[in-house]
Image (cartoon, rainbow, N blue to C red; front, side, top):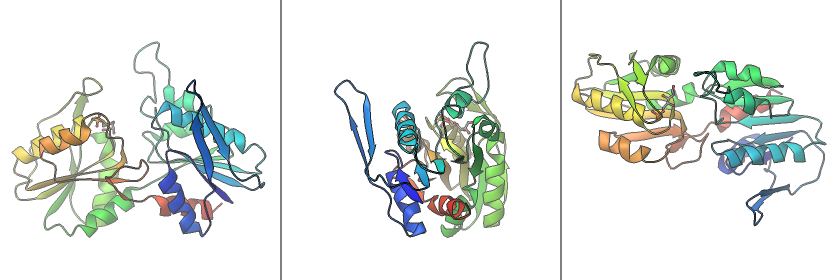
Length: 282
Ligand code: R5P
């Protein structure tokens, strides 16, 4: 088995290879003068492959498609997309829109596809391959436990994150609750007023991803106003676009915790064991 690290998942792929006791394959990535991408796998042995590449940017999807094509001769092609861009457009919200997640999934030509906490499980149905979603919520729970907080409470910022909050809270052995969110635009959300007893508590808000930080910033403000002493935010996918980090600190966050499905300074937790275990079972 070869591990092929895509340009967006170099560290994570290296960690997975390390867990498997193999060396990841070196690839060449550069751009032509007209902006097109050049990709080359610097190993021409024929073997089963696992390509690991998140797709936060459109160019990352191009690199993934190129890598899959370069592995055309491999007997088995596994593709791991730790963070799958466009997964949030998982249905037609307004007439005339595409199901972007479906459009992306249909481009992946592989034997198996693995995602990590993909935004909606229905996205998996669109891959023309056996598809599996790996769950990082226990890893988030382990990290939260390691903080040794005195009186913690886990909150989901919306009903969609409730499963994540419930799993992590059950692992840590602490209570959990959730807010109700209404999204008005890409950056603007409101969180419905809800009295939760957070006075003197350390609250961890948990979500699948933090993008603009709007959801978390509103939640942090409400919890601080209600008397929480510390508010941490934890997510699987640290998209953290635009001013997200500043918005979170302005709102009073204590720390931002995330996994390395996207490689940011906040990626304190690695999902490598999840991926390595899935590969070992193949
Ligand atoms: C939405 O349903 C997701 O689970 C996240 O809550 C959302 O994507 C976060 O986006 P933002 O950080 O821009 O509020």
